[in-house]
Image (cartoon, rainbow, N blue to C red; front, side, top):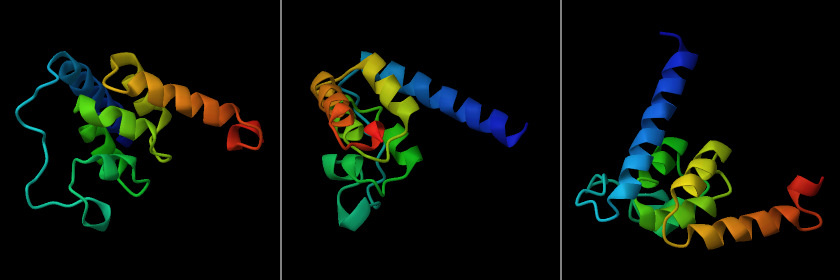
Length: 115
């Protein structure tokens, strides 16, 4: 299996898990390792970690399984477009508003999208 095929399979698996978790918003296991920490010692699955640009893409996909963190991931400047699109598709608390803020910031004069 080529690297590209592996990455595509991994992304497909992440999308499927994200979609499945949107059905059950009250999952009992948040997927966090009790001994791990996010950037600057923040809890691993917290709004601080979800919105921190230093958080890895793999961790963002994993955190997106938790509906309460999805709006914070949308606010993360390092979140990949495919993850934001998937979050927009499955929704969650505050996601609609976070997407509106993101769209507004991208349309603002002087934004990177305008250059």
